[in-house]
Amino acid sequence: MNLLVGFLLALVAEVACADSRNLDVKDLQGFWQSNLPTTAGEVDELEFYPDGHVRFLRTFKDNTKQEFMSQSASRVNDLEIVELSNNGALRYKLVLAGWLTARTKKLFGTMFMYEPNGHLFNGLPVSFRQEIR
Image (cartoon, rainbow, N blue to C red; front, side):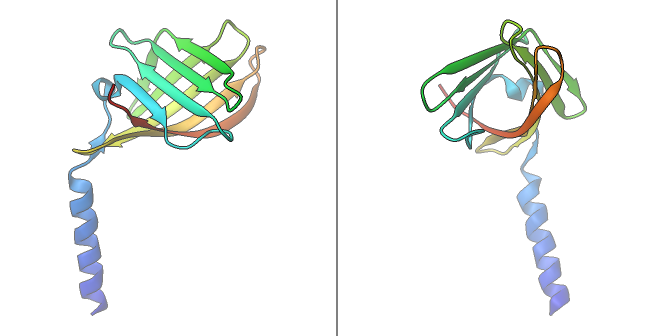
């Protein structure tokens, strides 16, 4: 009986994963919105443009905004690495990976935060879903 249950669970997991795949560069293009706030009340937006640059916008609960831009992103295997800055005051590095199915796209990873002098001071988990505009 346990063998049968184990076989069925393995079969279900294989079928569930069969129609998903890792995101590639062309899958990233477009607008992404955060699934969960990085900090209380925050909404994050990420946009990958066809020419390769990336825009990252953080909107906090008091409606203040921080906008970060990157001229390009780099790819290491299935990881997308985006270095962002906002006029040198803060610098972020997003290290992201994701997957898609026939119905959804998900992007997740870590947002590393750097002081202007280059010292890493924090790292927060991030998660995005693709929105259709």
